[in-house]
Every structure is written in structure tokens, then in C-alpha cells.
Length: 315
Length: 132
View 1: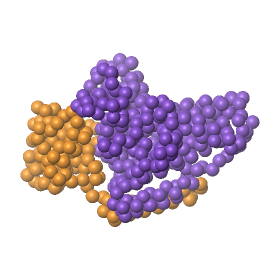
View 2: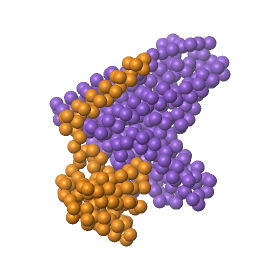
View 3: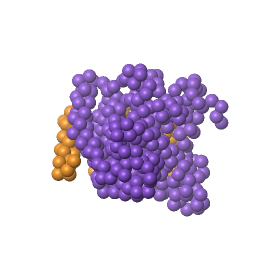
View 4: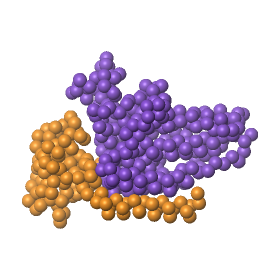
């Protein structure tokens, strides 16, 4: 069995590249006077969230890694370390990322961790670094279990996850319009990911891909960027703070407040944790499908356009 | 990467980017051109609750919004804006305006710079609509 396998900690090694790319994007925006916006406190918050994410990985990373090593002990399978196995691992880990990301938008417990990544009203390379501090508490490490049990070494799986994260850095930009058609067809791109960060009704719950956009096309969540409607970045209900602690924990606090209201059934309390964002026991809030429906009631002419193509016939 | 390299790099990198942005004038706050801009900012957060009245602050950085469901405020989040209703708010005078504490972990406080007459009038309007 493959033992003591190590790979470089690619995300940490990429830090100088991240900083250089942010400076390059900023210079580009200033020279061209287009291609994005930067704001001091927003960027500071994003960068502090990124630093906190690295710190939380150092402090809590042993939880996931310990879990993976237990699985590695259990599994009789070992696919080895050839380049083809690494490539296969990268592709399957990207499929894993798609589902974790989709759960991150559709299960409030996971959204509580992921929401901070969407909390900026800007979309630039610092937004890419606005990462969670609380990912360990979502238990989404479970979704990686099949990879380990299939015989991919935990170190390889985490290495591929790191490469996946680095790939996603460059797509957080408005400086790049569209890539060549073949690339847009297969890969996640700035255009596809701008859609994912949109709070416009048409762009909600779309484009969960990490590296390969084909997963969204396969599972029916792909929405192309619509030239007639600029992406409005941020949350459906934007936050009013730059405090990183509040950014990191606000949705957890909101879940706690909702689930501990007096007079609820145990089922209601559970639903506040696991139903999609916007669910409420009395129907007083609106989930993303309701937001889309309301938009179409006000703008029926949008039916059939990107993001509203599968809404016909719904109640 | 060893922590003794990573940590200084992160600290210097963050500080450098932030100082550069500030020196480039990227710390300015959003300012509403007119009442319509404030109305649009409100509707961006509450599309189903149109304002019945919009009152811009003298410096046009914030606006008091009256709606059929109570009063709210739109205020800058850097170059952008956000908005909240004022249900359950604790409103206090400060030396240069108002401080509004909200029962909202994600938007705990609004600091408004207002002229004296605005700071005198706005709480009355906010509370009147809140109790409507």
C-alpha cells in the first residue's frame, strides 16, 4: 500500500502569485478604465478571509486528514501514484467539488460556511480569496470519502483539491470577457463564474463548477452569461459589515436564531438547518425558485431567456 | 511552505494591497446622485417594497426610506450600498449625526453623518413609520 505519500502544499506556494495577480489586475483596471472595481475595505475583508481560511486549515485540517487516513486504512484498494491516476483523481475530485458546491447553495448548514464567499458586492481577484473559516463544521469532507475508498491516496486527493482551488482563482475577474468557444464549452471561465456570483434572479443557483463546466451542463444547472443583463454581485440580501468575524459567522448566527425560536416543532428546527436558504416555517421568506417566479410574474417577457428556460409550467 | 515565510508574506501582501488601494482613492463612499438613485438602491434589496418617500441626507451618502411596511435606511458599504428596515432599532444622537443599532448580526450598526436639523428630524420619522 502507498504510504507516506507527500505532495507540495500548492495553495500556500501560490500565495505570491495571488498577490502579484491582484496587483496586475488592479493596474489593468486603472489603465483600461474597465474590467472591474476595487474598494479598499472590501478588498481588505476578502484578503483577511483568505488568511483566516489558511489559518483555519492549519488549526482544523487534522480533522479531515485524520478522517481520510482512517478511510485509507480501511480500504483494500490502492490505485498507486501514476500520472494517469493523478489526472483521474483531479477530474473526479472536481466532480466532488461540483456537488459540495451545489450542497453549499442548497443546504443552509453548508451555505452558512460558503455564504461569505458571496458576501462581496465586488468581483475581482480578491473575491476569490474570500474563503470560509468554518468548512470543517459542514462535514462536507464526507463527500470525499468515496475517492479515498476507491484507492486514491488522501495526500493526492488534497493535492488535487488544492490545484482545483488555484484554478478557480483566475476566474474571479471582470477583466476577461469570454475565452475561445472550445474553452468556454468545457472549462469553467470568468464568464461562467460571474453568473455564479450573480444575485439577479436569473443567475441564482447556477454554475457550481470548479474546473470543468461540463458538470453543470450534465446536471442541468448551467446558465450562460446573458449579454442583456449585467451581473449584480453579492447576496440576495446584502450584509452591512466589513467585519471578518461577522462575515464568517453571520449565517451560523442566523440559523441559531431561526432554529431556537419559541413555538417551533423539532421538524421546523431541523428544516431551518437543512433546507435551502430562504426557507421559513411560516412561508414568510422566499427561496431562490420563488424569487425567480416573482421575477417572471413581473417580467413575463424574460421567460425562455437564460436562467428562466425551465420555469414554464411551474406553479 | 514554512510559517516564518508564509506569515510575513501574507501580512506584507495584505498591507501593501490595502495601502495602495487607499492611496489610489478606492476608499470613497457611495453617494446618491438623487432620490431616484437611493430609491433604486432600496429596491435592489427590497424589490417588493417600493418606497413611498425618499429623504436624502445632506451629504447624499445615505437616505431615509419610508414604505408601507415601515421606515428603512440605505447607506454605503464602501462604494456600494445596502439597506435595512428599522424594526427593533435603537436610535441615538451622536456628535455628528445618528447611530442606529440593529438586531441584525450581519448589519449591526449604521452610522449616519447628518446635519443638526436632520439628526433632530430623522428619528421622529423613523419611529413614526416603525410604529405605523
